[in-house]
Amino acid sequence: MQLLRTGAFLRAARSARFAVVQSRTAPSATTYIRTPSRWSSSQVAAEQQQLQQRSFPEQSVAGAKEVDPAKTAESKSDGQPGHQKTIAGAPYVLDNTTNVTDSILNLVGRNLYEHPDHPICITRKLIESCFPQPEYNHFTMSDPVVTVRDNFDVLGFPADHPGRSRTDTYYVNSSHLLRTHTSAHQHAAFQTLGSEERTTGYTICADVYRRDSIDRSHFPVFHQMEGARVWGLDPDIESRYAAQSARTAKMATQLKALPSTSIIVEDNATNFSTDVNPMQPEHDPTEVQLVVSHLKRSLEYLMQQIHNAAQQSIPQSARTPLQVRWVEAYFPFTSPSFELEVLWNGEWLELLGSGVVQQSILNKAGLTRGIGWAWGLGIERFAMLLFGIPDIRLFWSTDKRFLQQFSSGKITKFEPFSKYPPCYKDIAFWINPAPAGASPRGATPWGSAAAAGGDATKASPTETQPAAFHENDIMEVVRDVAGSLAEDVKLVDEFVHPTSGRKSLCYRINYRSLERTLTNEEVNRLHDEVAKRMKAQFGVELR
Ligand code: PHE
Image (cartoon, rainbow, N blue to C red):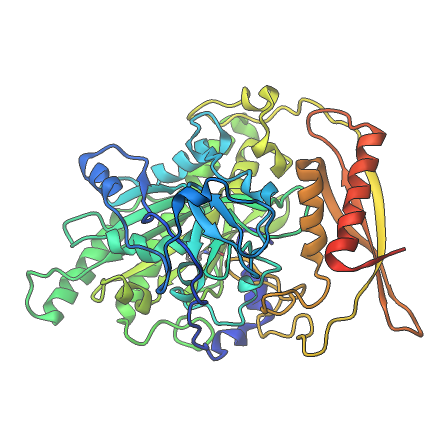
C-alpha cells in the first residue's frame, strides 16, 4: 500500500526489526550545487517568519562539487548520465542511478497543499488545527529533492531496505532523490525545536514520490503530513533526576489536558516490554507510557475531528460512531511503533504510522535530553474519505467541474460530474531472465512492505541497474506515456514456458480520462508507444 506500507510488513516479518543494520555511507557525491533547504511555514507569527527566513542545515553530502549555474539553464532533459536537470530551481547532474522522468518532474511545484480551496489544502488545515500553536509550528516544504542521507541514512534505514530500491524510488542521481516521505525532513525539523520555553512540536506537509502500481488509490506523487512533539529537560534545574521528575509531572498534566473523544478505540499495542515492539533502553518506562498515551490521545482527537467533519453533511440520525484500533508496527526511526486503523465499510484501513522517536535521531539533532513522538499520514487517503473522492487522479485535475466543488474550510461530498468509457488493452511479453548474481525477488528480510515505500515482494535488488523486469517498470512506462489517462494496470496472466523456462506476463491497461471520451486512435497510439518503450527499455519480447 502506498501511504504507509508497514502494518502488513510487521505482521509478515516481525523479525526484520532485528536484522543487522548495516552501515551505509551516503553514495558518492556527484557534481551538485544547491541552495540550503528552507522551510516555509503556514503561519505568520513573528517567530514563524524568523524560522522561514532561517536557512536550515545544508542537506547536501560531503564532497559535493559546484557546477556553473548558468550552464544548467540549457540543461538537457533526456535523462542521460552527465546531463543536467533543473528541479525546483536547483541544477543536478544525472548519472547511472537517475530514473526520474519528465512526466513526474512536471508535477513538481504544483503545491496543491497551498491552494486554499483544494481538498488537499482543506484537509491539511483541518489536521493542523488539531495540533495548534503555540505547541506546534506548521511547515510546508516545496522542494522535493532531498539527499539519500536525509531520506534513509539518518533515519536508520538498513542498506538493503526495499524502499531504497530504484524500482520503488525516483532517484535524481546517486546522492539525491525525490523524497519518499516527509520523514526526510525530520532531522532538520528537530533541529528547529528550541528550549523548553519555545515551541516543542511541529507538523510538516509536503508532496512525496514513489514508483508504484497504477490504480484508483495510487499515484506516483501524493501528499504526506508528519507531526512530532518533544519534551526536553529544563536547563535551569541542575540535577538530572529533579529535571526529569519535573518533566514527567508536566507530561502527565499535559496528557490530562488533552480533549477527550467519543470514538470507540481498541488498543492492541500496549506492551513495550518484549522484543516485539520494544521501548528504547535509554528511556524511562513511566515516561514512555506518558509519551505513548499523549501520542495516541492526540491522534484519536485528530480522528474524532476528521470524523465530525465528515459527518457534517449527514443527517444526525444516520451518523455512526467511529471505530479505530491501534496495532503494533515497525519503522526504523521509532520504537515502540504503532499504526492506527479505522473501520471503514466493514474493513480495517491503515491510516497512519507513529511511534516514540529513536533517541539517536534526537541526539543527532542536538536534542540529547529530549524524548518525544512522531506520526506520519497520507493526506489523499483522509481526503478521499472526507470528500468521497473516488479516484486519486482527481486531485491533480485542473477541470473546473472538480475544482469549483470545494471551498476553504468546508467539507462537502464530491459530486461525480461524468463517467467516460474505459478502454482496455492487453500487452503480453516474455521477460528476460535475471542476470547471474541478481537477488531473487522478495529475498530481503523485509517481508512484503515497508516504511517510506518499497515492496519487497516485487522488489529487484538495490543495485543501480534493475536486474530484471520489475512490475513498477511497466507502471512507469505507462505513466510516462499515458499520464493520468491510465486508470489502472493489472497483471491478468502469467506462465512459465515448460521447456525454455522463460516467463510470459500479460498486463491489462485500462485507459480512461476523467474529463472526456478518449478516441480509439488516441488509445491505440498510446498503447503502441507503451509496447515500443517496453521493448526498447527492458528488452522484453512482445507476444
Ligand atoms: N514516514 C513513515 C511512512 O511514510 C510514516 C511515519 C512517520 C511513521 C513518522 C512513524 C513516524 O511510512
